[in-house]
Length: 123
Image (cartoon, rainbow, N blue to C red; front, side, top):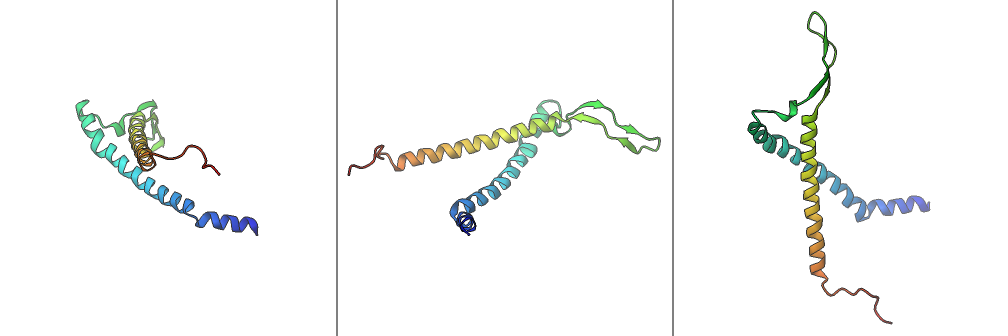
């Protein structure tokens, strides 16, 4: 019974609940960043580059095989580097945002305890 009690104590403590909330908010934040990149940042960049839509940038390694009636027998083999570029930009925005949040938290922690002791109190 000790293991079950220990797990229950862990699961209902703030750590597990905080982590769950963080994961949910992180997922929602990821969708917002993806929309920012796909719908706001990349269209003007594509326009500056001559009307390129990064979602469709790909290197075709092997063409699709189609039947006489136009039905695709074998899909084309492509390297979708445009989607990869979008994902890199997504990652950089998320990583920079997390960096700024952690940096702010660390600075606030330093401001709250400017005279914190570095050695244990004397007995």
